[in-house]
Image (cartoon, rainbow, N blue to C red):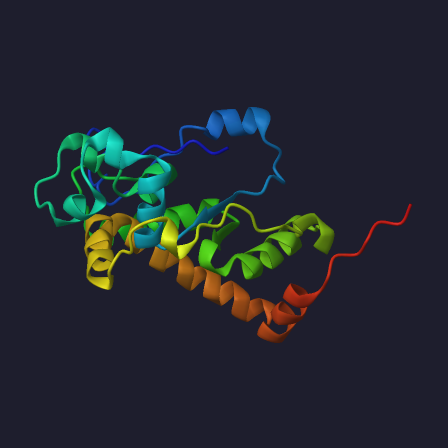
Length: 209
């Protein structure tokens, strides 16, 4: 696992535009092999926030409904802690949310140099095919079954307007998601769309005993 740290105001001059430092460099040299691959996954921020809201039972923890949370224009520090979690997991979240798009782009490019693949949750099958080839795996190594899929009736519906507001509240995540979605699209294009579809439809081989 790569440990990331966001750049702070105490760093060298111009650090707000400098890539965050990776504090695991020494650990990586001692523990990780040079051939290690770094993989992450991102999900559309509005959908991710909604799912995480109910999974984490934040309505009870924060004593507020999701609708009221979205419509609130003055969030508490505790409430802000659950925003921009994609950026947080990557170690580049700006808690003040004052980071500019130029600064976000520098950070995103830096992350892209570290990670060999950032998968897109909404394009899971394509992501697994790319992962298979990155890791030199077989199709059976990426076989999966769908489980614990929520039904539309399991929770209140979130309107498109509310989703747009969630994207505004999680703008750092939105930037990263769009950035890596474009990178992902280029990887799929380079792989070949026909080849991709063929591999998605390829059934895993049964082991011979």
